[in-house]
Amino acid sequence: MRNLKYILLIMAFGLFSCSSQKKLQTETPFEMGSASCQEYVGGKEESGKGMMLSIPVTMGEENRIELNEVFFRGKQVSVTMQEKDGMRFAVARIPNSKGGSAEAVALKLESTEAILSYTDNGKVKYTKITDIKQKQPLIHNSIQKN
Image (tube, rainbow, N blue to C red; front, side, top):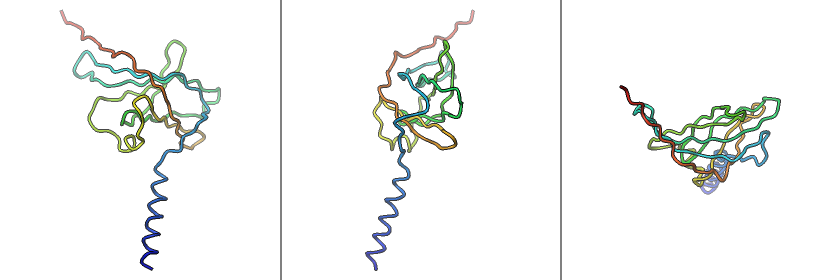
């Protein structure tokens, strides 16, 4: 009887630990181009510094997809859509702060990998982004007042 309790307890832990893992989609209802990341430093102290992750995205005519978050280098941040030169990008601004998301750290990604979460017909799904290119840092100069 005592062994049965331990076996049931171990099985319960096994079931709950599996649910925290992300099931990655190999095919997505949108296309992604080559992702890149770039450190930035603002010209003023309040501008801050951090990392910007940029993912070119092409979606179909039906706009049933919503991009949510990205897990990158131990951080978990929201994604916004931006348009530049006729192309759409999923952009994540990752602040340069200590600590991170326990969930993002648990994913154990390489520095050139990220996980993008998106909602497709009401269901949250995940896809892995690989080969993220590191660009040269972008340093904004402060404007001198006369």
